[in-house]
Amino acid sequence: MNIPEERKSFKEIEREVQKKINALGCEVLRSVLEEWDRELMENRDKVEYRHHSKRKTVIKTVMGEVEYRRTSYQVQGLDGKMAYVYPLDEAMGESGSGNISELLTELIVQASCEGSYRNAARAVSEMTGQTISHTAAWSVVQSIGCQVDKEEKRASELAAENEGIGTIEAKLLFEEQDGVYLNLQGKSRKEHGKSKEMKVGIAYDGAEKSGKKRYALTNKVASASFDGAAEFVKRKEGAIAGVYNVDEIEMRVLGGDGASWVRQSQTDETVHFQLDQFHRNKAILTYTSDPEARKNITKVLYSKDLELLLDVIEAYSESTEDEKERDNYLKLLTYFKNNKDGLVAYNQRGLELPQPPEGKAYRRLGAMESNIFTIIGNRMKGGRACWSINGGNNLARLLCLKHTGRLKGTLDALVAHVLPERYCEEITVQLSAAKVPQHEGKGYDGFHQMSVPASAKWLKDLASIKPLSEVRF
Image 1 (cartoon, rainbow, N blue to C red):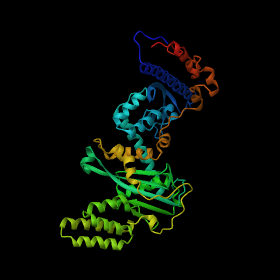
Image 2 (image 1 turned 180 degrees about the vertical axis):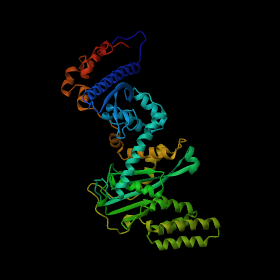
Image 3 (image 1 turned 60 degrees about the vertical axis):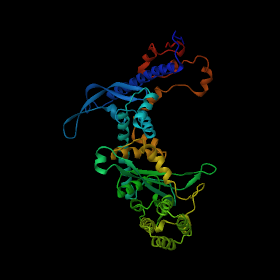
Image 4 (image 1 turned 90 degrees about the vertical axis):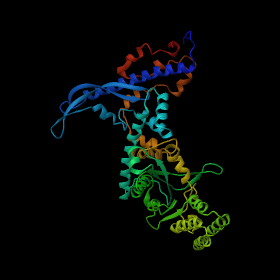
């Protein structure tokens, strides 16, 4: 490699090499797509598909924009009217976010789940040969989010008909639910006010040890939306039925703060509600100012004598002359009365619990506060973030998939450009592990070793395609 008079940093040289490789990649993809289009043209039903014209289009990839020409055909529709179709587009499969490759879509979605749309656009633009704006990142997330919404609604319908596709078998299923208030913007703010509660729910079948004193939830499912209570329950049940074989579930333990929408998941006697210990203890701290009274209430609570507990709180409310203090005791009394059935932990009620699966343990509830932050709060709360109802729902769906390890599989299913196998083979670099020692350290010429499409042999004659030792910067 010739070093110019003005020395360049390795970073600058690396960027220039990347640009050249990206440009080569775009040329290879253009050649492959146009050759595929010619093949479709030659093998088409010439009676049904009447050749019309060649049209240019662009697909955004991680290497840059690939501009190529594909053929349009005139066909007669069922209504007798003429229409124009592009067989190449149909053969490739539709991208969930328009003319963007699935790999670029995946990078945008992943980055958007980690930080703001502006930061996601900047990160993707720096990592790839494609420059995107924050509005483009937003559009991709909305497009994918809408498709996930359709899938979730379909899963809800299947769950309602007891036709879920879940395969994981669990005798005992844990559910925890809570809400987080997010700031709204635009029309959503005018309609619903400054903020609105996003409902969040998780379900899991136990926990396994991940460290000396740490446990990780297993087979976790998550749902989140601004939906009303009934719609949220349907969506949550659809998510569960998409992962678990619900026919095998014998018992459910439902944890929550006692909100009415959480209680809607307590559908029958197999669902045992437990008041979230964080909210339970917080209520005692909030409504009891006297340290001695607080200590006594807590002591009676842990004795599991609930009638005595309610009597003690009522006695404190009647013994104080401070009106504000009395009101606080009555608020605590009402809260505990409404959630009396959930004051004692599920594992202290004498319930006959199914045996946990091998390698797993049944832990006490209390994972919801952490999951509220991890799934939703860390990305969507704070930093002056404001959301529309639809925009918040779309991102929340992707965040739930990301934090349960199902985002990549969902994107693979929703967004797919599919090339025939032989085209995939043509653009694969032919370098086996056995050949590496023969070339490593001996001036390996990666450009001439690379396989290119049969119709694109001219690529090897391009002046820019040389061994690295001959490339001038």
